[in-house]
Picture 1 (cartoon, rainbow, N blue to C red):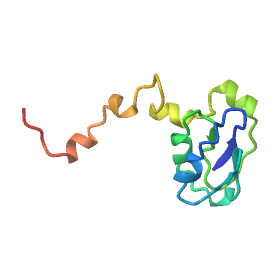
Picture 2: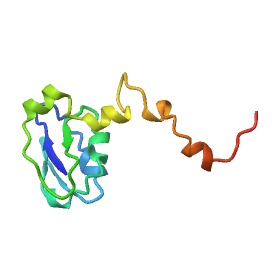
Picture 3: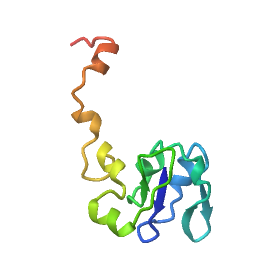
Picture 4: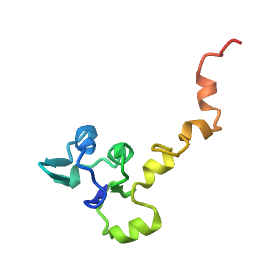
Length: 113
């Protein structure tokens, strides 16, 4: 469930507002978006993945909110951690390039050449 929008990191691009499928955020003129409907969060991590400055934290619990500290998240690297895990962002390797599971090969047509 979405737990935090870091006001100090947010660049007010409102991508999180635009990509959230359940409209959890409200856009605020001249300020960071606010989490307006936290209980509607599906824990899909889309907002965190799209945030270009790692200003969001989504906890891996879909059924409950958990208390978080921005300082603790910052120190542990968890702020924007999902985005880093999937390799989105400058200097990161997309996880698709390192994935060695045979699933895609087993369902994809064989390539020639």
